Figure: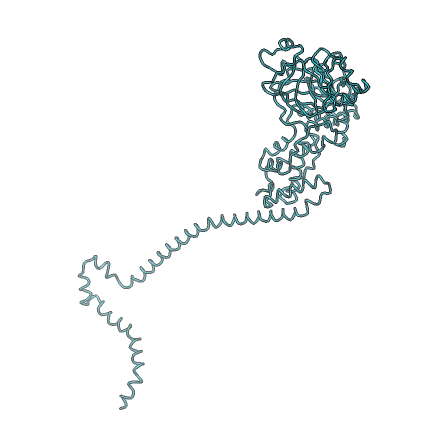
Length: 531
């Protein structure tokens, strides 16, 4: 009874003991079987060697080989992990640098946007304020991305443009060139953009409006807008300075004046004054600036700059073949393929009836022209002379008709015709043209401002030969057409015509020649430029 009652309670301990003792018993039972002299060992020793190498290694080597295999596997896994890390690190580094660059670009945009908020309204000058508004709108359209910034601070374009800005005075301009900074800033960015825009505007003719000088000046410069200037310069790299300087007039006559300005300033910097003087009306060319008294040199310098300014009003493309009339010089020149082939004296308008300054195109000439008298001449001269009875003019060879109560007075072709025997036509609303004249003696005078506004030419048939430039239309053939019948000759290629006003000219010998300011335009330009 006692044994029976204890068995159920001891069973768990017995089972646990058996489980704990099982490995030891297994080891004990295997030891005799592995003994060298045991039948089992002998049986295994008799097996083939190959089988023994694969199946019957000593039990003590298994853990070591397992560890070595594990280490090999771990090394392979580590190598693979390192390779994957290296592969991952390369793009991650690029991405990180890219993110850093993007952060810097974003910071620059935000800095520029903040600087622009009040910048466009800071300038009290109306013209400058408009320019700043244009620049602010330009950056807004670019989402406030800087145009002068790169990884090294300011771009090559910025540095090149700065060089030209510092030399603005060489072209008679007044531009505030910003200081060169070592690192980029929003303030430096805007200062440079404003200077570039201001230079381009001044160089293209923004400083003086020709209409404020005289209503008889029809030329209108094409002033460069801020976005156009910034687009042209910002991406030009080392050529940015040249691009900026190219907004100045491209004409050789302008470049010649620019050189004379530099020579004069150099002479003023190293004065060697003599008693010689030079006046604007002096017929002698100036060949030695060092000989000018200081007051005269200053006046000549102002005159050069004023004439450079008027070159900004002229069309940038004047034509390789062209006809020019310089009013103060009383001279016309015909240029073919950029080489002057003819010069001739001219008579221009009086102070009370000045010859307008403008550009046009000549499509044809007329031999034996009819002169239709302008209404202004009828009212101011013919009516007073006839006592209001214009019919009296018929006795003097004029044709007088009336249409809708308005008198039409014409002079038929002939020796006494006011237009002479030849008329160069470039149709315009001003009713201005070039022509021959029966009053040849006026060409002998040094000052020839006698006309009602049109330009009289001393040797019209020679000029016509050059203008027509076709076989069979030489001077002799053209003169053979003189008579009572009009002959219209169309030009194969219309010729550009430029009526100009320059009181400072560099002649063919390279000397500066000054002419009288007969209409006072140059004085007004000097005043407008505060010279």
